[in-house]
Image 1: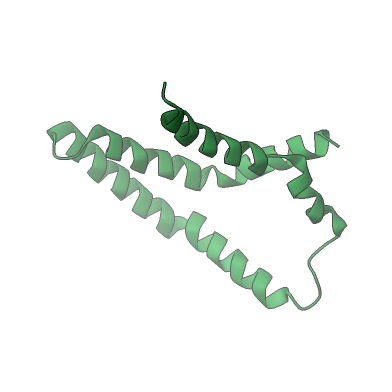
Image 2: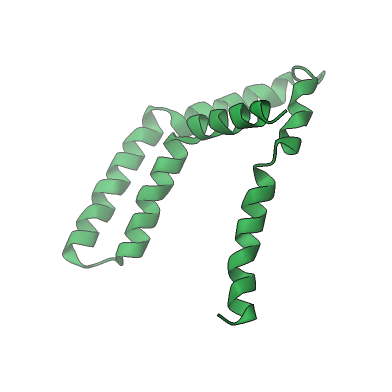
Length: 109
């Protein structure tokens, strides 16, 4: 394997490993939300509700059905179809993924 191909493969792995280190989550232990952040927290909760609510679920079902039909008829590459389906899993599993990361960060202390 040439060095260039190895470096292209190693960089994303290094970024993922540093993203999951417990030291990144230590800043969240300092307490609740900072003063004056009520509006921002409310906006973020609204975005979360929109992304994980009924509208998002309906759109995801339609997207998966349309992509699945296009994959079966040969109109779309299987890789692109799998990317859409994987994106839906990540979107709706985000809360579980973050909870798992927080648990592992707390265990590492």
